[in-house]
Amino acid sequence: MNRDKALEILQKTTEDYKKISKEFIETRKKPWSSFFGFKKYIGNDDKILDVGCGPGRLIEIFKDTDVEYVGFDISEEEIAFAERTFLGRSHPFKGATLKISPKFFVWDIVNIPWPFENESFNVVFMVAVFHHIPSEALRQETLAEARRVLKPGGKLIMTNWNLRSAWAIKKFWPEILRTIFPHKNLDRGDFFAPWKLKRKKIPLYFPLFQRGIKEDLGRGEIVFRFYHSFSLREIEKEIKRSGLTVLENYYTINGEKTNFLLGKNILTIAEKERHFG
Image 1 (tube, rainbow, N blue to C red):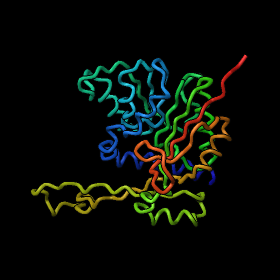
Image 2 (cartoon, rainbow, N blue to C red):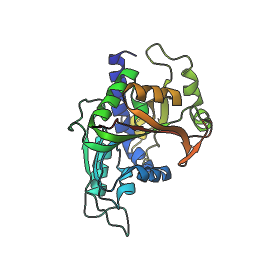
Image 3 (tube, rainbow, N blue to C red):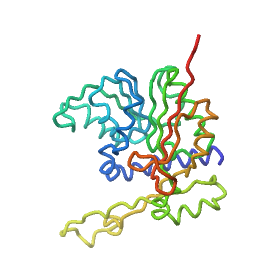
């Protein structure tokens, strides 16, 4: 895929998340149970970067630590939600003390360099983000930037949808089938997954004679978001090419290791080389 086409797709992704942001946030307020397994990679005083943080759902796994957390996302709506939720006087963790003071800001993952010094973070998270980046070239630039901001021995923790699982094929089979013979402007494994917006609720007194009635009623618009379907081998190859070392790379369901047919996600842990001497 050429760079212009990749950037065009990224712009579409930004617009797509603006359209679905309210509904998307409702489905991403709480961390998946598998997220709590990430705690074993986190030190109490670590500096954490959450790339594509969305509404800030990773915060819950750090709520009883002293980590320094920074999250950025391309969606202004999701960052605004995260700030309202975690930077106000109250937070959603009843009966718990939120020890950390998270920082959120709007930033595009491919707007490189990211606004951080070299070797700033112990851990960089990319949760369900990397598969939205079109073209291997842009993905390599993103991995190189993650490597730059990681401290020696720092970890990259990444999850991507396993779009070759039985679950994904059942849900998206027409779109996944097209990845076998991709469009000339796309790479093999690229496709657009549908998100059907809920129909707008129209009050009974709505004037049916109003101009533009078809647009106002809303028909449950379908938004097609870009995804790249990875295999374990492809992810490992791309990460190794960036100079990071792959420590773990496997299919998961509900935080447990499984096979490619059952696994809804691919969990990948990579490490930046340590300095010796």
